[in-house]
Length: 67
Image (tube, rainbow, N blue to C red; front, side, top):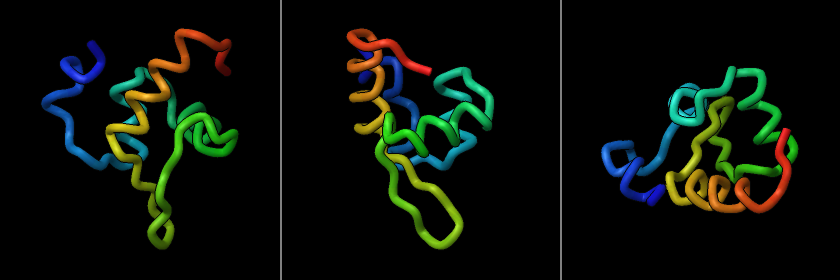
């Protein structure tokens, strides 16, 4: 179901795009990355988050309490 919701999203997103999709603030987005809830790739000062990692976070988020 999450794959269908995110089908128009890019395969790799930046932090702002991730926050928009998850409907969270930038501060909360940084916390998700810091706590390891969403796996990311850091290139220089930029965060890149694969869509597959966001989908897996959403699936796990239904099973565990989040921030």
